[in-house]
Amino acid sequence: EPEVTQTPSHQVTQMGQEVILRCVPISNHLYFYWYRQILGQKVEFLVSFYNNEISEKSEIFDDQFSVERPDGSNFTLKIRSTKLEDSAMYFCASSETDRSNQPQHFGDGTRLSIL
Amino acid sequence: AQSVTQLDSHVSVSEGTPVLLRCNYSSSYSPSLFWYVQHPNKGLQLLLKYTSAATLVKGINGFEAEFKKSETSFHLTKPSAHMSDAAEYFCVVSKHTGGFKTIFGAGTRLFVKA
Image (cartoon, rainbow over all chains, first blue to last red; front, side, top):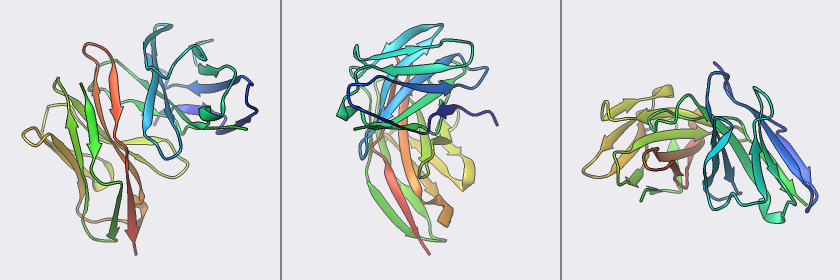
C-alpha cells in the first residue's frame, strides 16, 4: 500500500537555526498538509497546500514557517530561527481530494528537538 | 464551529474483553468523522471513517464505530481486545466546506492487560 514518507525521523537542532522537514506524499495525491503534536498535547493543523499554493493555514503557521514543493515528489516544511517551543512531532499528510469525506494519509512523523 | 471531545484520556481493559472509546463532536455542517490509531513512534493510521453512507462503520482490525446524530457521538468499539491494540486513538472531525477544518480530539490511550 502506498505510504507517506517523512525524513528525518528525528532532528536535533540548536535554537535559532533553520530546519527543513521533508515529506514524500502518495504519488497520485494532490493535497498536502502539515500537523504538529507537542508532547502531551493535541495534534494541531498547521497548513494545507494545493496546486503550489497554501490553501489554508492556522494561527500557528506564522512568518517563521514556510512550505514548498520544490519538485514533483517532495513537500517540505521550513522553520526559520527555531525556538524551544517548536520542539514537537511534525506529521505530513496527503489526500487525493479536498473533500471532507476523503481521509488523509499520514507519515510516521519527524520528531524535532530544539536545544 | 467544530469541536471534538474524547471523553477518556486513558482506558484500560483486559485482553479478550470489549473496548469502548468515546467521542462526542459538534459541527455546524454534516461532519465527516474518522478514527485514527497511533502506535508508539509511528504515524497516524486510519481505522475507519463515517461519511453519511451508513451509521455503523466497520474498520480495520475488528474495530467499528456508530454515528449517532441525536447524541452527537461517534464511539469506537471492538468486541475483544488484543494486546496489539494498545495504542493512542484519535477521533477526528473534518469539514472542507467554507474553509478547511480538521480537528483532532485529545486522544485516548488504550492499555490492554494480559
